[in-house]
Image (cartoon, rainbow, N blue to C red; front, side):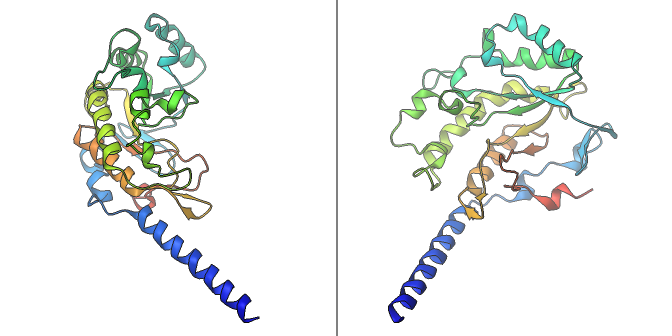
Length: 265
């Protein structure tokens, strides 16, 4: 009985210690607050606003009906307009675009925005067709594509923890990986910035997605990294993104959702 009790206590203490350690890693320590990166409703709310029910464009409620458009799976930009017109004909008023890091950067330090990689043209086309855009630049996009959209040159770096992954189940914040993510955002965002609805009348970009399926917790186990989200949000804001930031949660557990801001007027 005594040995069974000690074993039970040891197991409970070990589990509690592991949870506390994971939770500390999960919460992080970067000095970036929610308010530092929150959408500025005071400045832009008359143009674009939202609550728990819908978006508001120029004060009028609008239901977003969106579909996916992966331009890198259709590397012929002469066909984009015809296909997007079919989206419109189907009743969609918005598209979400995964921006594929590896598609634009085949070699380290080199970025290509020409031809089928001309995302500025794609954004202008959406404005012409009056389609809103939700940008999803990852850095990791999944999308059932090679390396989840990360460049192969980055995936080959053994010293870099991709998505901060120490192993399959544990993440530890990696400054080097974050440095490369900042490089990606700093190269992409200038092609998107001037297309924000908060930047000009008729702009198509209404929201900017941070990361992709970056779970905060899985079944209550804290495996995600708040510092990763903080850093990416801050980089996006520093680079001139002023539209609302959002993320997606594959299991709909409310990962990294700021409910106070969501419900605020």
